[in-house]
Every structure is written in structure tokens, then in C-alpha cells.
Length: 230
Length: 375
Image 1 (cartoon, each protein chain N blue to C red):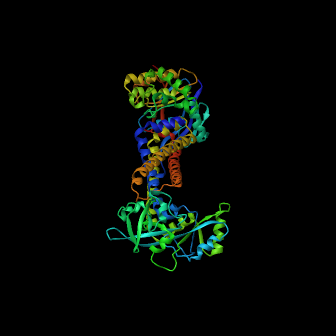
Image 2: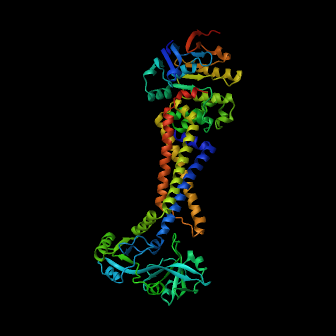
């Protein structure tokens, strides 16, 4: 399998002088295309920092990051923005939907960012919402939706531009078991494509069975990388 | 993305309302206090404005309208003899007492003008016929001070300096700031009303030859007569500046206006900055999704200019409404909104919007998009 993400000796700290906290210690890792990789571990172990670096929204102090064969560690800020725009779909724990835009407009944002015409973007967004079975909520504002529905909107937004890398932070944290599994199943479907990869940070052991690989982290280090066999 | 920016702005009605309310209030403060200031300033020189004469000739040492240094009688002829003077008319301007019907005395400012042309009298006659000023003992009074005369009607009789004075016209002109009510009459009658003194000619009102530049005519008058000829605008400013230099009123009023402007600017900057800060999470999300700093900058500027224009329109509309209701009915209140003030308010508003946007933009450019992963 071809490597989608390659990390070499990643270190990351926050703060200054005495207050400096070393969050990631010499992380090296490969993630393959066609895989759904789960990052697990206790809170504060560096999972979110690591996926932020993979997703080109945070810079490592040292080390090399190759995401989708792009040397992220060498990119300028604008190049990283461009990279995210074209290649990465994010799903946030808090959904981060824009409260003043309709569900459909929220989903269409990645297409607007890519300068898609308004009508085209809205049509594509509607189609994606239909796939997620919430097409009937397209005109609603996000705060009128349940947590599960909002997460499906967030997933629709992440998938609408058909990115090669999807990064999810606790996507099922605020969902009941049934909805959580359904959402992970949707994500799993996207990884069937050989040129895509999904990374999920989670504490939710109900969804472990859907992963292909599990990266266990503790104190900013990778403890183990296991293939998941059901 | 600009449509998204506007939808983000207009989508949150409460934030939008508070933002626009803040901006409207700022414009209101700037435009209203500015209008009161301009109104007050214009009243210092209201007679100059109302008479609508292009050039005023006076003694070189005359410092302001209400303190003329009398000219000798031959001054009028000397001015008329200057090349480029189309006409020159005398104006007497002097204080005296008017005896009211109840026997009380009222200080008045007697203004005597040329009897054949009546140049020097404000053109807006409210009641009566201004041409009747040529009748014996005829005077015209200004409407806005008629209360101080006991609300006289046409035909009412007063005494000025023991001379009979009959009201034949009532003139509509804005009140002077502090000076006594105006009483208009012809120059020859004014000489009877004004207490005897060696010279009574206060000013010479001049119309320059329209074929010559006004500056050239002013220069010729100055050189050939030894007097001081000023354009209407310059005399207005000279009078205003005298008040600025010699009384605390304009400075005090100006400080109030400046305070209003500073307060308005602070409200605007604070309100818009708060608006952006409250949306920081959403803006960080957009940044994480791939919106560049340049696009975010333009989005914020668009939002800022949009609310700025709405706030400006509402603020100016409010001022116009106040001006056309409260101040119009209350003649004694000074309120004047020159278009320059509206331009200044517009520039301040847009400048403040851009400035507060820039503060917000600096903040946004520094945000790490990774903050979206923090709860």
C-alpha cells in the first residue's frame, strides 16, 4: 500500500522558558492510503496536536511531515492554506458550523473557498446532504439540528469537495451509540477508495471495530501501532 | 466568500443590531454636536451671512462684525471711485436702546442701509413690505427676536432714542449668537436713532465688477482707500476667529464636540472589534478550511464598510430628522449642518471602521487555525 502520511521525528512544544511543555516527542509514523487510522490515548497525550500537524494547521518544532506526498514542513503559511483547501477535509469535535449560515451554505463553504459558482456549490451541497440523509434540513440553521444531525452536516462539509485526507477529532463524542456508529460507517465508506485516507482521534471504544489501524499514544509518544482485526 | 461574509454579518440579528446601533450613535454624536458647533459659529457672523453681500469694507483695525470702527463719510465715495467696484452702499451698525410698550428698555442693534436699494437687509421678509422702510419713522425687526420686543405686529409704535419708530416689516433671519435684536431702517433714519457721534458709517457693502476677479477688486480697494476690504467668507472667518481667540465659548464647545467624536470613534472601534472577536472561532474554522488571510481580510473589510455605511446612513438620517423637527421649531437653537460636516463624519466613520477592522485583522492573521480543534 502506498503511504499517505509520513512523519519523521516530530517534536512539538508549547509555551516559553520554564512554562514550556513538550507535547510531542520524536513521533515517526506511516499512514497508508485506503486506511482508517484511529488515534487513541488519554486526554493531553498529544493526539490533537499530532493531527493538527498532519492537517497542516500547526507547525512542528522539528521533524518532517509528508502528507499526501507533500512536504508540509517546508511549506509557507499560504502554501499550507492552499494545501488544506485542495486536499483536506476536517471534522471537528464541536462541529464548528457557522451559526448564521444555513446547513446547505455551511456544507458549500469548501466549494466557495475554491471559487465554485454559488448555484453549483449549493447544488453539490444539497446532494451531499441527501447522501447523509438530512437533505430535508438543508435550509435550517445549524442550531435547529440535533447533535447527530450537526455532525452529519460537518461530515458533509468535509466530504463535499471529495478530499483525499479526512481528519476527524472525536467525531462521535457528543453522539449516541447508534448515531456514532452510523457516522463512522459513512466515513469508512470513503476510505474504500485507494487514494484516500481517514484519521480519527477518539476515546470512543464503540467505533474501534471500524478502524484499520490503531495508534496508541501516551505522554506525547506513540506506545504502539496495531492493525485492527475483527 | 464575500456573500458568505455578508450572510455572517446579517445572520446574527442581535450582534448586527448592537453594531449598527453603536455606529449610528457615533455618527449621531459627530454630526449632531458638529452641527450645533457649526450653528453656533455661524451665528457669530449671522448678519454677514444674511445680508448676502460679497464684499465688506471696513476700517483696518476692525476686528469683528459687532465692533466696527466708524469710517469717515468720504470713505464711501473713495470706495465708489475704485475701478472694479460695481456699487458700494453704506451700512450703519450701532447699539442703542428701544423703549418697549410697557416702558422697559431693550438693547437693540440698529442697522441702517441705503434707502434706495435697501442693500444690507436680509432678503426673507416674513410680514409687511420692506419697501415701506422709506416711510417716515419706519423700522423692520427680526422675527426670531420679536418676543424681546413684546411680539409686535405691523404698525406697532416704539421709541428709539426718543424718536418714533413704526414697525413696517418683520424679517426672518436666524438669531445672532449673543448680540442684541436687530432693528433695520434706512441709513438716514439710523443717524437719528443712533446716539450722536462723529462718524456713524460702520461698513461699506460692495459688489465687485463681475468681469474682474474678486481678489483683484479687494486688492484695489485696500491699496486705493487705505481701508480693509474682505470677502464675505473672510469676514465670517475673521469674526468667528475673534470669538475663538477672545472668548472661551468656541473652545469649550469644540472640546465637547471633540469629546463626542472621540467617544464615537471609541464606540465604533470597540463594537466592531468585539464583533470580530466574538466570531473568531468561525473565522478560525474558515482559515482551517483553506481561506487565506487575504480573503479573510477582505471579508472583514467588507463587513466593516457595510455596517459603517448603514450606521452612517441611519446616523445622518437621525440628525436630519432632529434638524427638521426639534431645531426647526426652536428658532433660538443653533443648528447648521454644512455638507463638509457630513463628509467629515463619513471620512471619520469609514476611517474608524477600517482602523477597527485592521485591529481585528491583525488578530485574525495571528490566529492559528489549530485553535479550531480546541474545545
